[in-house]
Image (cartoon, rainbow over the protein chains, first blue to last red):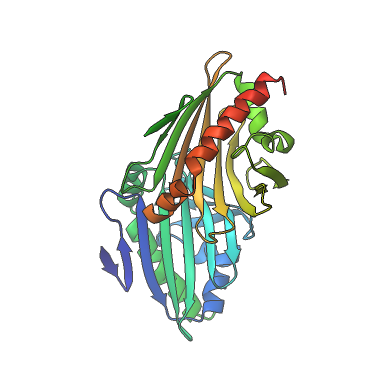
Length: 160
Length: 160
């Protein structure tokens, strides 16, 4: 378990899960919008140094999503998936696959809790193996999530 | 681990996985067709006593699927999901959710191996919790899969 700026990530040994909780100082309506409008997603999701190029991002049941992170050296990291469930301002369930590890899909549930002007985001991701989960954690997931949520809060504080 | 007519199902305690292997005495082309054409799926998937009503069944990335099993007493059991990956005659990755347990989605990978006139089907399903996996196993999944694969083999032997 680790704590960065209020982000708590849990990845218990021997299980294929990652759990994360982070409170954001913004109303659930704004947080949900930042999760679902592609031009907003591109401004916060992932580590700070990455430029995010959004592909299709169709937040509806069966909708597909795709994005590419590009680092300062120009290396590209593509990700894609589909949306299994979309309940506005409540939860989103989607698949996730890194183009660099084809076939290693995971299933992620993001839940939003309205705390009255603040929002608690809860993430539960499950991988097809413990090794897949361990590889994802080792890839720098923690920093990416931590910086991402910091950027999300900054974006919403700026009134976007 | 259990073995029914060549079907081997593994559900290791304390992990959220179900694995299954079954060989079918039919070419991979036919097996894949029986997995993807809704009118064929309806004739084999699930326990023998169930009538299957197919809803949308769009086997493409982002496509949705829905089906309802109806038992002899008329009780209905609905299932739905979306397709994350579709590689013809090789593998299908899809989400799965039972309407009776909303929110408890799982991710299932089905792989097909061409054994030269025979086909090996390998299933790897991962649940959002060990409790979800245990509930699925307790629900009679094993009998459903066993009878389903027997019916699949009978269907293909009948030249469908």
